Amino acid sequence: MTDVLVEPEVASDPLAPVLKIECLNVDFHTIDGWVRVVDDVSLVVPAGTTVGLVGESGSGKTVTSLAAIGLLPPDTTRVTGSIRLAGEELVGASSARLSRRRGRDVAMVFQEPRRSLDPVFTVGYQIAEVLRRHEGLDRRAARSRAVEMLDRVGIADAERRFGAYPHEFSGGMCQRVMLAIALACRPRRLIADEATTALDVTVQKEMLALMNDLQDELGVAILFITHDLSVVAETCDWVNVMYAGQVVESTAVDRLFHEPRHPYTEGLLAAIPDPQRRRLQAIPGVVPAPTSWPTGCRFSPRCDYAREGVCTSGAIPLEPAGGAQLTRCARHAEIELKGVLA
Amino acid sequence: MSPLLVANGLHKSYPQGRSLWGRARPAQSVVRDVSFHVDRGETLGIVGETGAGKSTVGRMVLRLVEADSGHVSFDGTDLSTLSPASLRRMRQRMTMIFQDPFNSLDPRMTLRAAVREPLTLHTSLGGAEKEARVRELLERVGMRQDHLDRYPREFSGGQLQRIAIARALAADPDFIVCDEPVAALDLSIQAQVLNLLLDLQQERGLSYLFISHDLSLVRFLAHRVAVMSQGVIVEQGTPEEVFTDPKHPYTRALVSAIPTPRPTRVSRWPAGFPAPGPSRPATERRSR
Image 1 (spheres, rainbow over the protein chains, first blue to last red):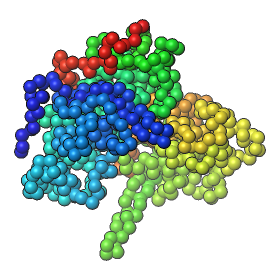
Image 2 (image 1 turned 90 degrees about the vertical axis):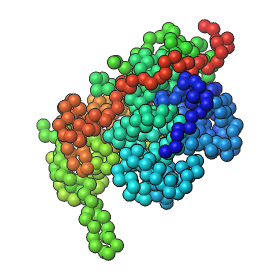
Image 3 (image 1 turned 180 degrees about the vertical axis):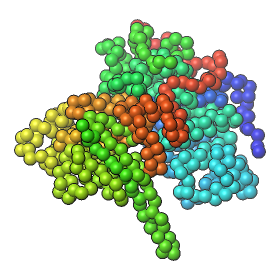
């Protein structure tokens, strides 16, 4: 067992975020030129907490997370702003440095465990590989640590399963292996991108409990990306809601559900199927594509509260809306929004 | 009144091929002794996890997959005895909506052609009547007239699913198998499609067999629920019975695993942690 790598900045100040994104912009190169897909996103993840990044398809949540781990292709994307891992700036860092960081200091779990694992290597080999690369362990030591990790993520008979191939495992077991790979080097941050979306609910419950336990044990900071608000309610401490490339609301999890301050959040909450109601409140229209984001508030064409002028001209800033809650709504002070009942 | 659809003792197994030594492997049974009925104007929800056999059941009901044994009768007619021609006629009254609208519509057919096709197959309407019906259907599901000559690639998932619904409704069916119809859609769009399905049921007295892995969804819109696990229906009842007082251990495990949209976690957010801060300095902010 090696000691957890203590980073000086974190050791000196327990409140220092282990992951901090400031004013992040991401542009994609397309046939129509550069198109902005992530616009002015700022978020912090303190040690030992789970921060949610919620949004629908095309809101920019996955691009934000890929930028945070330096996985966007440099020739077709442009990243500006600041991404700091315990004080170290990642925007503009060389790919060699990013690659050293990945796996050791920050790890990622993706939605489709089967596609993320290499089908021609045993699961044990794939866990051991990370340890040999980042911690320089020899074969034998890496193997025993890998078996330990398999056991830790709840795979029974780990010693024997070390030699199994991904196709012999179910989706839930593959995702456990992904988590084992991600956490093998005891990174201080984990990015989970729709990590439980493809799993059955009972397996999802086990996975979430496992991530929770590992967080307690290792103090991992988790950036949790999902479209599922119910999962957010059960896992996150702080939530950032994304819409059309921007964070539109940022708040503690209980306030998000009980006192939302952005109409989009209210709309999402009202669209959750609830047996008490016989009709769902749908948000009309569709999420706009990055090439056709409306001016002013990007949600205004779909918003019941939108007013011509106030909402449709000029960029809307993300502003404090009581306590630490932030909202990107020009009318947040005038309107009453409904959350879910306690 | 007798139920619209009755399924009795459905079985399905798939052969597993032969072992290396040429010995036949035992067939894998995917659906075992499944029986249920769907009343007129009713939604029966089938829930279960991956591999429970729910989609196979949905397909056997329409005879898209042939059952090894068991019967399905629709409005008093035993489907397994029908000739291919009379089965085709029967299919006018029963149809299906699939999970992935990107794959269930022909990419080379315009909306008009896609919705017109079932009218040509199942009705004897003339050209002008067909055109009127196509327009009416597409309008009903919220598509515009100028969408008629466009191709599926020009639409979003939610729009495509509404087009698939229009197509399913074309021949004026009584019964629709909905196999995970909103699983591929975003939450805000999912609500649009579900509301449409509920409204259409009210207007036309449709019956649905609604297959889903999402228990909250089934609880929301089904009149009765059947829970499947490993090819068997382990519990049937009203949503109230199944979700608030589950009897079978599997149902209990399943129900307790549903995440609820109510925060339960004791927050680990460090006290006094500085808020992420507004996106721009206060001086730059617009005054109102």
